[in-house]
Every structure is written in C-alpha cells, then in structure tokens.
Length: 201
Image 1 (cartoon, rainbow, N blue to C red):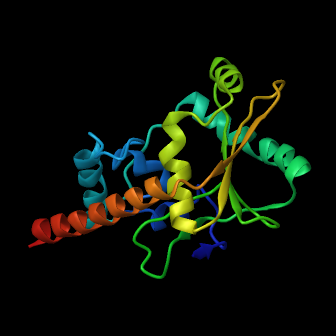
Image 2 (cartoon, rainbow, N blue to C red):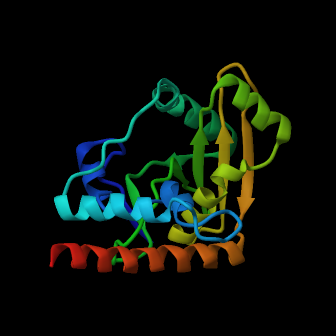
C-alpha cells in the first residue's frame, strides 16, 4: 500500500493523479456487486483512455447535493472521530508502486486497520439508509474495492445528515468479491492500455 498524504483531495494536483487512473468510486463501472462485467465498462474505458491520450481530466458535473455533501464532510468526520478515534486524511492510496489504480478514502483510522467512507445523502435517502441499516448496494464495490487497494482488514461506512442519528457500519472484507474486483480492474487496465497504444499508433 502506497499512501499519498501530501496531496489534498479536490485540488488540481489530486485531479492530475487521477487522469486515466481507475478509482474505487468508479470500479462499479467495471464490475457489478454480483461480480459481473458492468454495462458501463466500455464507456468508462473510453473516458480514461481519452484522459491518458490528452492529459486532460474529464469534467464531472457536481450537483447541489454533491457540493453540500462535500461541505459537511468535515463535520461528519468530527462526529465519527468523537466516537471511533482519530482519522488521518490523505489524497490517494495506490496498492503498490505501479500506481495502476487507486482509492481516495475519506479517512484512514490511526488506531485500527481500517478506512472510512462518508456519504452525506439527501434527507429522504439518509432516512432510508438509517431505516435499512445495511451497506447500500450502490457502494458495495467502492467499499470492497477500497479494501482491495489498501489491503486493510475492514472499512467503516458512514451516512451523515445533520439532525439525524448517523449510520455507521463496520464492513468486513468479502474475499471472493475482492478477488473478482482485482481481476476485473487489472484486466480493465490492460485493455485500456492496449486501446491507448492502438489509438496513438
């Protein structure tokens, strides 16, 4: 595990590191939570291949809800730290020196072999998450993919909305799915580099 701690998430330097580089938040575009190839795989490959060729990061549209979530993330992290202990922030984590793919955790726990993923959904969605009390399917690949990248033993998922009781879940490793994610992502990276070489020839 290679932790990049001298780059702040959301900065130009952080975006530059992510050019053409699959992250845990995008791995659901490669593989589904059932371990099958995602319907978005080819489109995602075209996006990242284009980034590698041009050196330009694809513009991503930020909704008002996403902007709001980013704003209250520090508050959510403070609430988490009060209950679970100190969390260190970092820019990215690569699995090794090859830097082929990454995750950008919302924190790495200082005293536990674990990471943290914070979501700040809309009020109705936050209530739904709290009512169901389990990891939402749409984040299963991101969380397990983060454990695949880091090798950490477990991951905390936090859904936070001010005024509601926070939902904090300790998610254990799913070794079968992690193996499938690793194979899918590494295969994706090989195919993407082949595509880049063909297009640059």
